[in-house]
Structure formats: structure tokens, C-alpha cells
Length: 119
Image 1 (cartoon, rainbow, N blue to C red):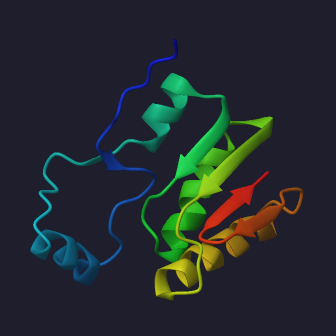
Image 2 (cartoon, rainbow, N blue to C red):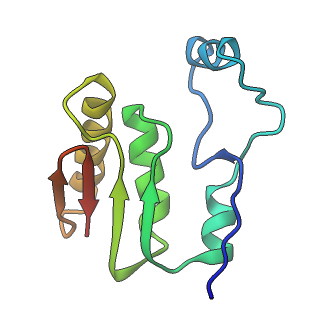
């Protein structure tokens, strides 16, 4: 049986501006115990066959998350992304994926409903 540990934190980057930070704090999320944990998680558990990414949906954050995560995916592995629909956040995620793919043209991106697959 494979076990995994849930970690709390930001994957590859924190908030780039005070406005976004204020929104999260006003929503009631305590940020004092949230660190940037992506590299730690990847180094501890990677190389991955499969990774599910449902993190910060802002364009630049998606690009940074994919940049970090792709270094820890096996060559035949897949990254699954949530919320790639046509709404505001889905468009942000798609734009982040497009920026990532410009730097990684060997990767393919497929969409099925609200879910995206990078392989």
C-alpha cells in the first residue's frame, strides 16, 4: 500500500501583490502557517508518474507551478490540472499553461471538460 502525506502551503510562489493577499486573509485563511512547500514535496516524493495540480489559478502562478512540477515528472508522466474551463479562473489557468508550453514545446496539452492533461 502506498501512503501519502497531505501538506499545507503554497506550491511554488506566494502572493505577488497585496490585493490578492488581502482577499485571502479577508476570506478567513490564516497565512502564518503556510509556507512555500512545492520544492520540498517534489524532492521528498518525486519523480512522479502522475501529479494533480489544483493550486493558485493566477496565470503566472500556474506557469511557475508547472515549471517546478515538470522537473519532477517522469518522462512518460502526466500532470492533471483542475479548473481549465472557460470561466475567468479557467482562462487564467489556460494562459499559464500556454506560457509554460512556449518553454516546453515537447509537451502536449489536452482538455476534457474542466480538466486538463499535460504529457
